[in-house]
Image (cartoon, rainbow, N blue to C red; front, top):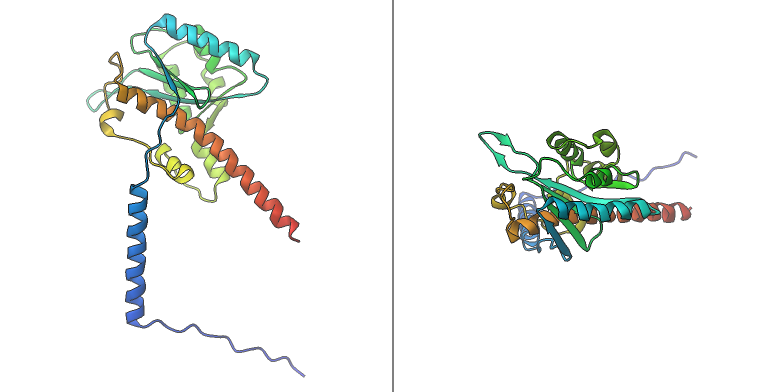
Length: 248
């Protein structure tokens, strides 16, 4: 006796009224989600800003960082960023500000616009075997720093870079061209201040305003925070996969 298959159940077609109602609901949901995202707070930097404009102070801080790297048993992941002035007439200016976050509580802001050379300890620290610089599109920042200032082992620094966008595309279930703003949105459910007035301000002028210092610190802080968040995401996905495998 042959087997009988149950008749396939066809889905009922929606009426024009139902389609219109669904479209209205989808629009309301989209608008509600947009308002929720716009109402989210900005990412804030909770730590200490260590701001220096003189070579001797930058050298002293760099010595301390280099000593820490030499004594570290593990890799040091450093939130890293640069700022420079930009003109639509002449293009990008020389690197003016270097931001270094060795942890989530301290951010070094070195204002180097008046320096022809940078302290040797700083170049050694940034290219140290135990140091990894992390940030979004960070390799281009490193190349620019090496073009503007001599004395950097640029190839070694590039090899030691951790690009957050590349890292995100290897971990998250979505692949795209990431910006720091998008990563903060996706991973932290927060906004990051990218005010053009500050972003395109005169970074070469000493001293930096409080708004500029805050902006600069947040970028380096966010880079390190996002790196750690991506590691959490990777671990969570690994645990979920292990749990799924154990179900069989």
